[in-house]
Length: 287
Image (cartoon, rainbow, N blue to C red):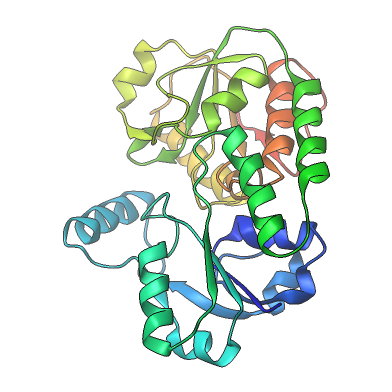
């Protein structure tokens, strides 16, 4: 089978299920595992390089309002690769090429590849999508998904520590989808975020009024080093509530992408909330 993955999470899932050799095309964001970087890039961002978070937010809003694409699908690469299966999404216009654009491109090219769309809104949906991808690529994933569920259940802590997760830093966004659930599994109470819904724009006064006891900065699209840099900017500017512990985390690896490493993210949250040994490759305390 020749697989084109238009989602970093789907790429990771394919490799985790032993189908890495079948993956022939990926996106510019597919960086895990490292072998994924060796595959041909089929999808790239249309945003200019070097934008600040505020500029990214403004540009995305303008383009979405105008009905413009945020990603460029390389039709020549898609034709050359002649895939049997394309994995994409219809969850978020900001996250990746959506399913309609993929189907239009395949029709234009006369390619009869099967298209699978994964659109999880919560942790159960993430595990279900792993099984869906496994079935599509001929690598049953029931046991793999069940093992992840068991790890998650083992982590579960009863607690009420008020946690503010920043899904974006400028302007601030409160978390949605599976992230509030992650906080709850880790023994926290997510403030200003609703599980199963989209992330929403908020304000610094609203965050202050929510009385968080811990702030976790997980800006979508950024790794730990970049998240740390952006979060330090907020600290330097005095944007964050005072006298509250502040952590930066690897959003790309363990929070934003709906894949197996979300369980790593829950484990890291549980550790940082309850004085455990936090994996330094996942989380870093800044205050």
